[in-house]
Amino acid sequence: MFFSCTRSEPDITGRWVIDNDFFKATYVLQMKEGRLTALVLDYYDGTTRISHNAQNKQYLFKNLERERGSFIDGISGATRKGIDWEFRITQMANDTLLVEQQISGKVLKELWVRSNKKYETF
Image (cartoon, rainbow, N blue to C red; front, side, top):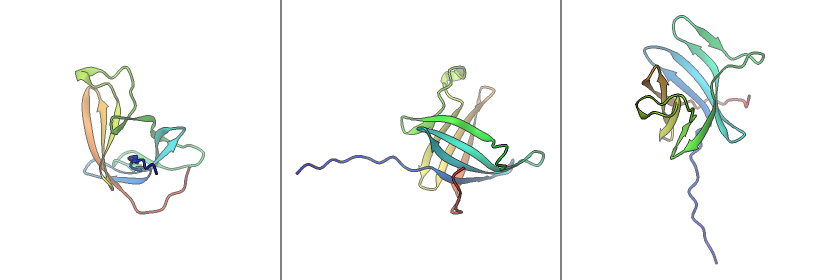
């Protein structure tokens, strides 16, 4: 008999919410053609409001790939201070993601929390 132990990758697809002092948002993370996408379902920062619309889908990102336990976009132009990505997502716990975004050479960090609401595949 032969047994193989393979480590399954954590599933971070689904609905995620952000509710902080600066904005509120809901995104759906989906795998499409081996890449992670984040569809904007709802976003509001006190000035700008975005709501999901089937005719005008908006994405926070569309092209993240798994690398060293995280998902990154691997863009080539964002290399200040040794950072070679624009977005990076790391799973901190089953229901918590650390989402980092490079903006103007600085790294913005957010915690996203999994929502138990059902979501459709868009």
